[in-house]
Amino acid sequence: GGEAILPCSVFPAMNVENMEELRWFRSRFSEAVLVYRDQKEQKREQMPGYSRRTLLVKDKFHQGTAAVRIQNVQASDSGLYICHFKQGVFYEEAILELKVAAMGSVPEVHIKGPEDGGVSVVCMTSGWYPKPQVHWKDSRGEKLTASSEIHREDAQGLFRTETSLVVRDSSVRNVICFTFNPILGQEKATAMFLPEPFFPQVSPWKSAFLVTLTMMGLLVLWTSYLLIREHSARLKVQQETVNFQHEMDESQKTKEDALRTAGANMVEHARRKEAYMAAWKKAQLYADWRKELFRAWTFTLDPASAHANLAISQDRLSVTRKDSTRCLEDLSSVLGSRGISSGRHYWEVKLTNGEGSKWILGVCREGVDRKDFYFETPGKGFWTVGQSSRGYWTYIDSGRDSLLVRQAPKTVGVFVDYTKGDISFYNMSDNSHMISFKEASFSGTLFPYFRLRTGNVSMIIISMACASEGREGEEGRRGRKSRRGGRGGGQRRGRS
Image 1 (tube, rainbow, N blue to C red):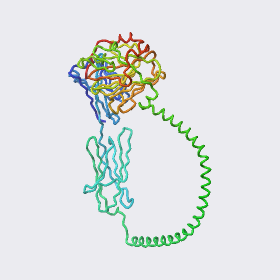
Image 2 (tube, helix red, strand yellow):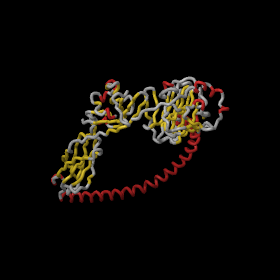
Image 3 (spheres, rainbow, N blue to C red):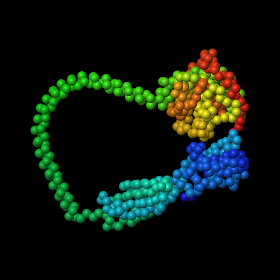
Image 4 (cartoon, helix red, strand yellow):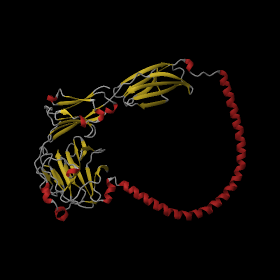
C-alpha cells in the first residue's frame, strides 16, 4: 500500500523534457508502466494493472533525471523494470529492480490442547510479503521444531501463516513464536506460558496395569511361536515334494515359452524402433542432433558488401572492426558470398572478444536496404540474434525480445530450413536452443548476415571447409549487385 519511485538519468546531464519518448516497462516493451511522449503521458499504452497508480516526477527534468512514482504498491509490482529514453534514432535503456516487502501482524499464539503425549500450541499471523520465516524457541533460547506449517496467499498476494508446535517436555513452560521478514531483516514475536495442568498426567495404577498387560502379551506371543514352528516343520516336507514336481513342470513350460518369446521379440523390436524415431524428432531441439538433418553451408565473406570500417581476413573467413573507437555501430555489416534458395543448411560463427561488445548475426533477404538506419526485423527481411549491454535478444516486428541464455555463447549455430520456412539459432557452447522463427515468411535468396556494432569483437566462420570464391557456383553470384549497394555511413546512438 506504500509508494515506490523508479528514477533514471542521462549522462552527461541534459534537459529531458522535450525528449521524443520516456518509457518504463516490464519484461516486454509492450508491457508499459508509464509512457511519456509529446510532453504528456500516454494513458492508452499503459498496462491496466498500473492505471491510476503511476505519476511522472518532472521536478528534475532540467538535470537529466526522470522518475515514475508507483502508488498503492502491490506484491505483484515486485521484479525488474526497464527505463527507455529515446530521441530520434538514438535510444538507450537501463534496468531497475523493485523489491516489495510487507511486515505483517504480530503473531497470535494460543493453546490448542493435549496432542500426541504433549501440549499443542498454534501460532498465526497474516499480511506478510514475501513468505515469512517462522520458528519457535523456549525461554532459554533453544530452538523447537514445529510439527506443521501452512502458508496461504490472499487476493493481494500477501501471506498468512499458521504454525503448530507439540511440547512434550513438561519442564518447558514458555514458548516464543518468531516471524521474520527476509528482505527487511525485521521480525515480530509473541510468547505463551504453558501451565502444568495442560500436560498429560500418568497415574501409578495405570503404570502397573501397562506392565502386566505387556508381560501377558509376551507370553501369548511365545506360545504362538512354538506352535507355528512345529506346524512349519511339517509343511516344509510337504512343500519340498510339491516344489520338485513344480520344477519339472516349469522346465517343460520354459521350453514352450522360449519359442513364443522369439516371436514376441520381433514385435518388441518394431515397437522400440517406432519409439526411437519419436525420440529422434525430440532430439532435434539440440544442435548436435540437428546437424544430422542439415548440410554444412560453404561460403566466405563478400568484401564488396562490407562496410568501410570492417577488416576482412585474407581467406575471407573472419571479420573485425578496423577502428573500434569510431561510432559507426549502426551500419558496419557484411554479407556472405553465397545465398540459400532451397534445402536445409547450417553454419557456425565463432565470437572472439564478444563479451562487452555489441554484435548481430543471422540471415537477411537478398536486396535489403542497409544504407540508412534500420532495425533487423523480420518485416524488413532480417532474422537475427544479437548482444548488447542488456544481454542477448532478437528483433520481432513489434519490438525487441530478450533471450534466456544460460551460458555466454562462444560459438553460434545458424540453421536454415528453406522448405519449412524455419530459421533457428543455437548456443554451440552448451548445445542449447536460443530461438526459432517458425513458418518465417521469406522468398528469393537468403544470405548470411554479420553486423559488428561496437567493441573489439571478431566473427569467424568455422563450420565448413575453407571454400574459395572460385568454387561458389552461380547460386552465390545471384543478387551480388544489389548487395554491393548496401554499404553506407555510420550514425551514433545516445546513452542513458
